[in-house]
Length: 456
Ligand code: PFF
Image 1 (cartoon, rainbow, N blue to C red):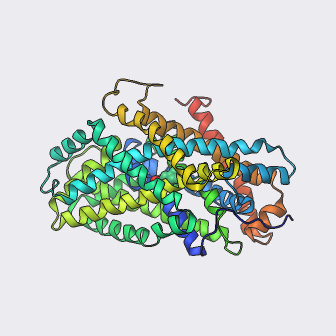
Image 2: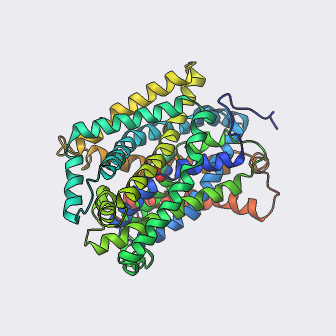
Image 3: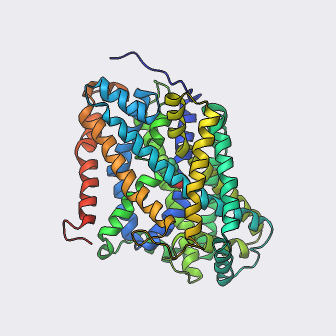
């Protein structure tokens, strides 16, 4: 076995720090903004069921593979993939998996920052009391005003990107770790409180039925693709974010256990977000299919009506902002480490360049919401296109390559010793999943989408 590597970028101070940071990467807008609206657009329970199946059969095994590859390679995803491929006697071309991931992270960050900007705008509006007593109609028009104004969107997008650049430029321990320690637990507590509120005031039974009683007739090709894309997006998989975080993990931590914790927390937060939002959607006769504006048109009504709503609402958007922040930093990290390793840049410069480039690309997403709303590429505006392309196409392809690499190209000894598992049931189950179940599932979903099985 080769000598153990150390990362030139640093290491987490403890196993808990890794769990918090990786959970911070996973839990973000994907759970609270994206999950409810994609579920609403994809038929509720049918989507949730397929989503949970994807998390178990694809998400968890791929996460274990990604952490193990990251920790063994201890470099940026591109260099890690190349080093491990060569070490295992294969082509260095595997480094392109890292490149694909970097591109996906870059595209995601560009629009992620725009949506995080909405969160910032709502934080300020809530704190200023703008939402007090707001009706469903009022909430809709506040949202329409915001997304219709490119200058406002640009200002919030810029602020968020600067915040992200600042944290990433400070490096692993001082930057990334500190941000996650207190904020994740606080978000969780507040979300539980919101579910409590929705339980008492909204149509909770209706929401439960909507989310958990699947109408199997609604499981279409698109629902399955959306669910798989959501699983990759929500768990931060397929682009090297979890890989680079794994590269800062110490050798004695158990990868399987930490992966189970991260996946469970992420799933729980998504389900809680659904349970906080849908009772209110039904109570106020909003459309579950409202799309990307769903939470921004739903929750403000609750904050506007509940006693102390200014405080609860402001706290909610502050915490959502932090959740988005801890995810955005992981989107930037793979590219930054690569620039540092291969181009000799210092971290601050590398972060600034990447962040500014993603910021520029984000402007297309902003304009697609207003001035350029007629511009369509493949039938979609830029925001939708970037979202679809990254989540539903690039991340699953990245995930497919990552699990194929871990399962078929790395030797049993390498993966087993990195996971620290005996050759027993647990290890064999994981290997079976990454060898057959996850890659085959990903390919089938794609083939089905392309219409090979008569799908649309
Ligand atoms: N998982 C994040 C979320 O749910 O908001 C988004 C994300 C972060 C996706 C990092 C991909 C990634 F690599």
